[in-house]
View 1 (cartoon, rainbow, N blue to C red):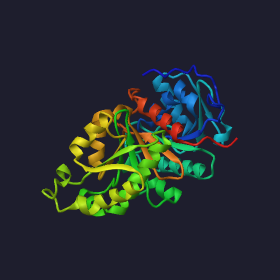
View 2: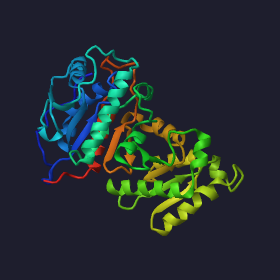
View 3: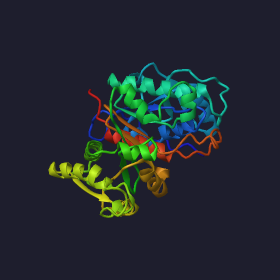
Length: 349
């Protein structure tokens, strides 16, 4: 896998003269493909035009990844994001030095799991202190995270805890469809029990605000039902749509938010992919993740909506089976950085 083009100028302002946002890029699980997708993504000309990326991770692991990829670049350790001076062929890293030099690629490691947590912790601190305007995360491995002593379901819940936010939403974004989830990493029975009008309303509002921030002035939002055919007027289920979703939609519409539903999930994503909806609201994890991964996982981006700072991520895992081989594709990381830059406020001069 060849490194991406590095011919972009070392600009620190956009075409309108505004300072580029500084994006903290967490390295994820160092035994996975995170380092191998970060290196080409941070060398990519599009990334350098849009933001000032700074890795929170381990410099030596990035050097190993660059060698595997045959990437001609300089890995520069910095004490803080402000010290990073962007330019072609240069990757800056706040080096936490947590990984042993001989850490195997593609193997579950408690050390790597703990390190992945520490990268996120430091990035969250930098964001809360205003030193970075966005966070872009490489994938972590939940089993390794737990083995390292950090019992969180994933990035979303971890970042919410670290930033002191009680409730956030997961949004997946691909070129064909965007989806926000009312519930995520819980069992299906628990998800149905947890869904209630207030949670549905807050989720739709977070999705609406994110779409407006991304430049969609009046987003049209399709809201899925829970049961097959959205209950089909009580034929399926026990009236969950009428009890848990419809009251929220009535409040949202009264406030001028164009929320349509409840919709049968088996057709909602097709309609969104042809442009009928700007955003789909899924009620539970697999209802949203399944269609998104079929329609665009290669360019998919995971966003956490509701944090004090925007957070984006690749929509793939650590891929232990190909880690260390140079076969990982960096397209999703490039897109995650693009969206992080797009949705992050410019820093104050």
